[in-house]
Image (cartoon, rainbow, N blue to C red):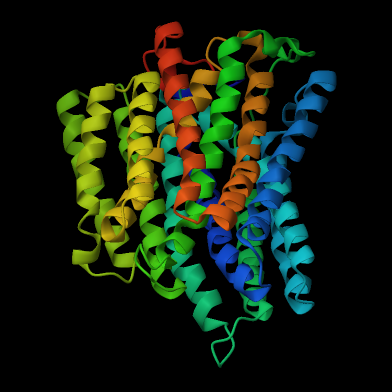
Length: 473
């Protein structure tokens, strides 16, 4: 995209902070699905397959919303370019807030179908934000630092996913639960009304803050289906499908996994804290990725900054979760391994992607064949190696698309459908073969990502770092 303003001469600190606040809330509410799944499963006596309809409806909305957006863009040009990023972001927030409000009638009538409907509307709202907010962040500054900014805002998105299991789990499982400790749909009413109110406050803040307007020249908008001629884009769409599917499936099953007698035999109140470690790992990795992808910093300074960031974020996570240091000290091993993987990858997106995917394959196999703490540590360590996958897959997929970049971007966002489909398949396997064996599904997902990274290493070797891709997303 071409900007009508010189992004290098403008200070975008206030707009960037405002949008980052939105990313935080967006991540928080998305991760609440991992709390809802075990809660609704017990409340409505669901099978694992049926409980995964939560993710099916939520992430299915991403596909429907992105498909509509893609079809409009191919026939009439980019809709966001016509209405502006600010209006697009506000529309997405209002739609998400409506989805949260719909939890009230769903809880009042104790209807699983209404819950799924509310989640679908909520997902549509976040689809609009996925298309607009990510692109807007990349425009708030120089193109060279776009990936670094996107990783930083996604790190705060991950901060929301980290505290959601603890705070959200406390609200639903404890604070607003029935006095006798029984499960009741009413426990979800007040929390989601609170989320709706906060979203509306964020919308009010964004409406009052002066956000720069970016325009794309109409002649640059390519209609038709020309993006399909690029093989690495098609492979990238499949890789994104597998990444989101794998990440969501693992997160969705962590509480159920830790409940297994052969693993840890924990209840929801305790296991929700470990779920925070899974998402907290993604937060650590994204902060490290933001530093690693900053090409203006020397290798020595990168190492120092990454060590400082990892230490600080680890202490933040430790202060959030209701666990002792001894219970989370194992996570330090994964942080060290993450450091090593980053430096072996040398900030090359394709190589780093393959390394991280390979590590996750090993961790998943370990979780499947081992028991007790080793199985638990293996499954929780996956989060930190998920960290840079979204941004790296996204950038590699749309690398070199030129005038088809906008069209290719919407196709990659459409692939978030993986979060709807993959958990359903894992739920089916969990019902028939057990929770632990069901993780074979994410194993295949990460193998696809590993192969995609290797493919791009060979065929897109000219891409030295994420910022080299002319994405404008």
